[in-house]
Image 1 (cartoon, rainbow, N blue to C red):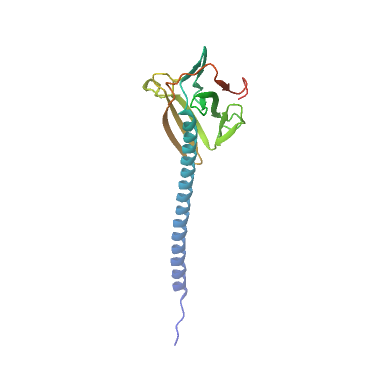
Image 2 (cartoon, rainbow, N blue to C red; image 1 turned 180 degrees about the vertical axis):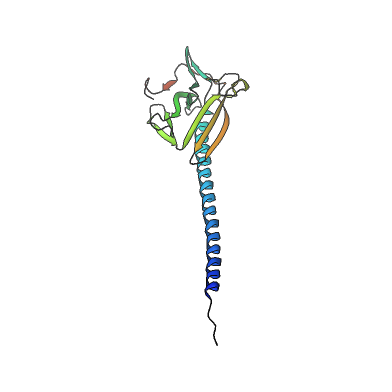
Length: 198
């Protein structure tokens, strides 16, 4: 004689499968959450690294204070979140023919974007998801980003970038200006936007 399953046996089997599927679902949800957190952290790291690399590539070529005759073209830090400096353009004989003004600042219309302008060219967005960016002199007296200029005897700029896409990430760097011992001749042209343009 064949014996069927009792109601209790069916209920126990259903409860076991429900528990098993619930445990698998919990593992999948936790894995998905961890993956999303990791992706957001990776995006933040990538944005911060891209930002610092972009600034460093141009800033390293600068000088704390280019001088042409009686005119000065210094590295200027405004409100700790804007930096203006001049990048040399070399001619074929190795001399400097132009200085191009470079500006990095947060977008006033979208504070999550970092803008860059080179000379009179169009403004470009170089990074998104920026929580904050801070510039300062990089010497020990300026460790709290309290210096708004860069000294000839300590040609270092400190940068701290904080990005956020659900998770905040912070990256800082100190960039040494390399062209500190170059003197400029009177014929060097200056390429910069008109006053108040950027």
